Length: 144
Image 1 (cartoon, rainbow, N blue to C red):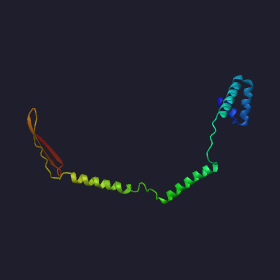
Image 2: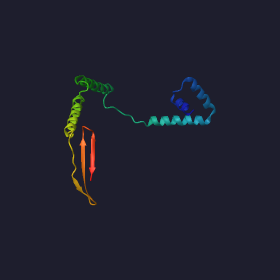
Image 3: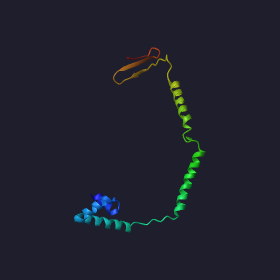
Image 4: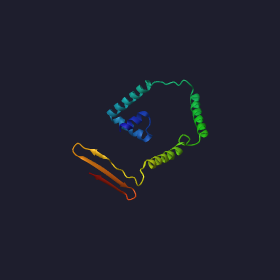
């Protein structure tokens, strides 16, 4: 009901609801007091609202905005779509190819045998040998 009273004060109610609110106001003192408070608040806000003055006329202001829009549209026409990201179409595949080349060159040969030398331990002396056969898909670790 409060929203109806506020709309009544603002003059935004349709005529049938306005008549219902006026009928209710005639019998409800608390509602009349609320409506009067809302009217005073509205008057207070309107009287203390700052007045903002634009340094240029309205037509000049909007013509400047239209000028900026037209300029931006002309710039879009001159520049092909996707110009800023076009170089990425070539960079991404090139980086991928470079990564594949690095992996292939750093990969050990198929028949390479890796031997780990002996190492000294504080507790016991031991050695380890690692044999890898890529063709058989086998890796053997021998710890002595």
